[in-house]
Image (cartoon, rainbow, N blue to C red; front, side, top):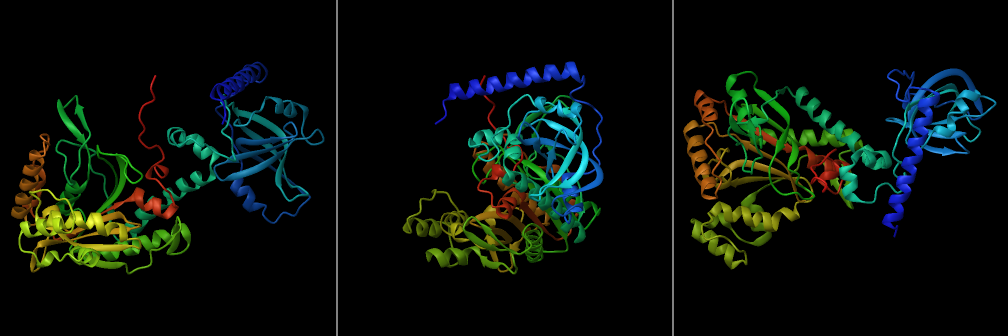
Length: 498
């Protein structure tokens, strides 16, 4: 184990050496952080352009590249510099590099950002290189680089200092590049499917659209407390009421003041959409098409590995009503029960601890979470949720205890939640009032009725299917990430103690 005091001393010494070099550079070249420098080609473009250049061949092409120094050999004669797209080797030798440029080598440390102008060549060993004619210091790094091959072992440092994680870990770098492709792929898919993207407020005077504890703030000008959005649902539905579009979506940041785990972060990204004149079965088809397209974008196939499990995003996904799934796993037939008391008695008889005031639907949902969720490894749509826990969904015809709602599961995780949206204004008000009363009974005194949303629904919202997709969890699956914090660039961290 490395001695902490020794490690700190080495770091301090290395930092002091860099500070001394910075001072000397200021004396000799002046501006060590110049505002103007123009490269003519990126490393990735260079690799592509000269991919057919044979070994031991030097061109007459002069290029200007730039990047961070990741390695240095033979007193700087050979350096590897990296930009966002890849690396290039820099060759500096008295036969090809002017003395003024060679004098810079002793001042260059790993982590510095330099610009190089020179001739493109490929070495005898097949390494694409630049024979340096001019070297420009662009940024002097005052802190040592993390060790490239081992990366950052301390997980907390990786999350707190993400720039170092990406700098030293190609897997992390690739993962965030893939995340960008996933988010842009979702947007492109939705737009090509006819959906219009909108932006709704992140500051709400009344929080709603989901059941969660909000983050609270204060608006100085309006002189009122406000809440960071826990869901955009109620504003997006008002967009449908307006007639602006029949298909609306938003890639949105939500905030829920709740626990942190490998699958939960208080700040997270969702894609939420509403589709007029569609229902939850139409939304199931949309999810399957979207997931298959995203898998193809990242992996070139609808099949991919997550850990040691092979996943398949090839549709159609398994579709199973929640009561049927519970019966299959536990043998408990909730549809045969008529009362809340029967449901509680059956749950207790099967060894489950349930609250004395739980309803039929709450018992069903609890046992599903306890016994069924963990079995849903391949993508599955679980349908027919209890109305007790689904205040915004339409009833299943012929079974008023259930609603037209589904959640999409994969790897035992919930990835999406969708409804045939309730648009009966009287029923909607009734359910929201009941939800409010339950919240107040739990001690959520800040919870209010969203009268502006109810007023909009009174105006008339077309029948619609609605969907929320957890972008972070979906990205975890598609990039083989073990924790949600591995796919959030800068996850929430506790402030460091003084």
